[in-house]
Image (cartoon, rainbow, N blue to C red; front, side):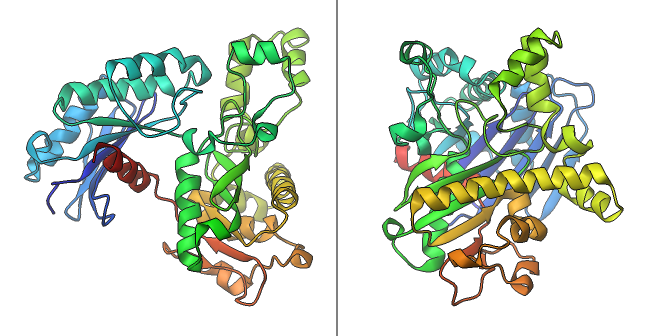
Length: 398
């Protein structure tokens, strides 16, 4: 398959690099891969193309080395990306702050601004910048485009975006609710409209992006009116390793009474909390096995997860007033039938019903898991952030 007109999508993490070469119009994937443990002696890269999967245990001291090795894989398959007529390199950037709310062609000025707002996402934006720098150096003639996780939620109503703290302090430090996973929520809400064969402007929907990171959104007529994540991806639902909503006083208590530093509290809430903090595990398959074996900690973790999820669903039912569809997406949302059933159990009075047989079906296709005659369509819609980034990148350079 030719790479002419395709987009190379890069998602750089602190020690990883996911990539995909995709045709934005058709959605056909030429190749994809992931480099892991970058900077570690045990680093590796896995590349899938032409029906073959290749894994290379090779030293990858930095992201530039990872991209170089990916380009070598492409070259071995007869695709020289530098000369293949790429439309763009699309970069996932987690936080756009107040500056960026559209796909943006990357220039030195854009890089400087992403760096300036990096304190809003210290675990994510610096890694994204490393990937941007490496790609611009190795593919200098291909335009690079930044697609921001926060962009979809830029237009949240003031009532939903504003924290009730001193206005001057909030303004000075850009403190507001930004929302995340926006690329996924945008893509999935569009797929819901396509599945229902209805203009998106006529649909009120709740989208539940449930992966290791998890977020919910309320979308009225294609525009988000609320979302669970806030200034950072820590707010909201219980996640794999993140706490989600907590009393801010808990942070003060951990510092004053427990003697934890700011960095220690950061690590606790982002990496040692959520499901892992409650039961020592954040893989839902393992948690399910532990529950079946009678593990009380796993049961409590699951119940806390579902309780928080139902609380947001209930809030968004009220905010939207009328709900036409509820869509589950991402790893847990697409694969954990019990989560879908328990999250919506007992809501028949609101026209929300999950059909057990439909819910049990495993498929990579969008599907309805509610009866055909119910008022609210409950759907499972696979997300495709890479395709969404590719399409936005192609559009902005085209």
